[in-house]
Length: 335
Image (cartoon, rainbow, N blue to C red; front, side, top):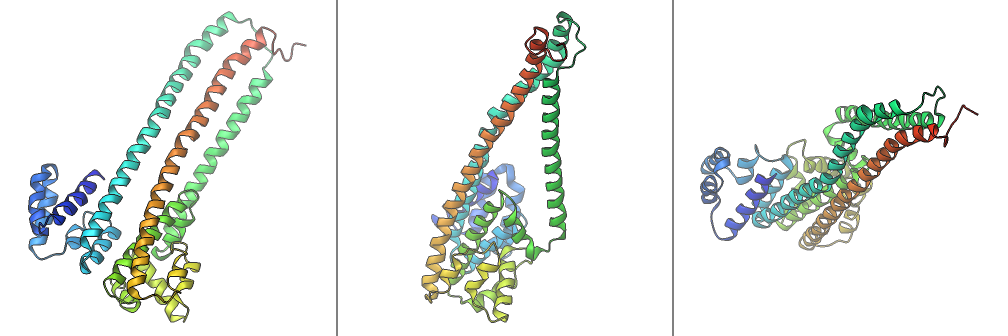
């Protein structure tokens, strides 16, 4: 993650200063000696006449490679590199934020496990030595333990069933329908939808800004990797065109296609105006994606605190209830 962030930032900065792609590739092994082999291979591919996207394809995801290819094919490589640099920078910052958010709860969990170990193997045996013998069961503690076990067992079973269904559905789904399924996943589905909105709007905006019409875009996307999101979008676009339906109805059929497309493609705007609208919408969607990631990360810590709090309450009740029973506070079965 950090290497890709530095790569796109460096390439954007040097390209903006007037360096050529080949010269930058030659200088990268000197700037990043820890990754010299990869950058030397990149320079060799560029010297053979390969494009930047083709040279980088073994090292980056297919969607990012497609985005770079579209940008460099239509003279938009510089803004594309800037956008990718921002995206990977924000992604790295979110990962660092998530680690920071999880650090304190993880410390509490370690302390709680140490406390539970101490209570189980040290405190409880000591208390049993000083407490009078009692054959009467503590029904409150019994039902408390049973309830907790049922809840934990139910949660664990639900998670296992959910993960197994995800695994089964993922294997059964064809590449064409997987993005629809990604967008339906509880909680995370909203993030997948927002990213797909941004990705489609940004790349379509670049293509339209390069002077291509929708028919030319379809012919271009038809050569993309079948597993890529743009190829899947193109298949749906061709199916819609063959049926005689309008493009604006495509958003109603597929969850990963922005609903705003119905408005953009029904206004009758020129291709230039439409490209500007899509690029502006992509920027707004990108900011929305960052906000949603922040909100999701902020929810992690409270949820973990609630789980830790419930565990601590159970630990203390498991100690205090037997003590209250022996001193007469809760003496079930002796009346």
